Amino acid sequence: MKKLFTIIAVCLMSLQFATAQDIHFDGTIQEQMPQFVGGEEALTDWIETNISYPLMADVNAVEGKVVVKFDIDEEGYIDNIQVEESADPLFAEEVVDKLQDMPQWIPAMQNGRCVKVRYTLPISFFMTF
Image (cartoon, one colour):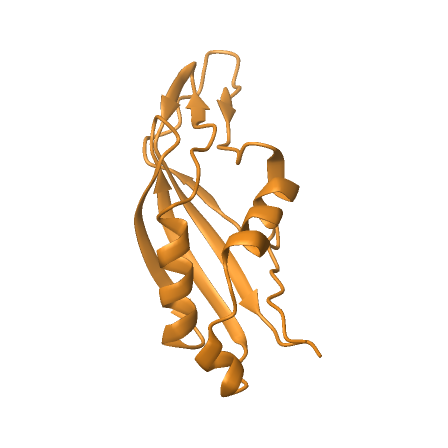
């Protein structure tokens, strides 16, 4: 049986604030990164449940990775999905199509207010037997 495995490496995920970080008088930065509701395990479960190994990629025995970047806005909605890297166009199409229906996240907070962030997510497609 061939199946999609996802690898979401924390070291590969990056968050970039769209606004400058304000440093308070005590030298601390008050911020909270955006979170998928339920945390990283729930995000992995959502990806494994919703993103399928494309049939033609399966037939052609194609494996590889897709790296997408998207904005998580002040309300936690996904927007501006861009493919940075893809081993196959079929993988990119599947990922973008499904991410458009991704549920709302808990938005990032900075200095007590919600802020828009850019999020990088790598998803790997590997065949198993």
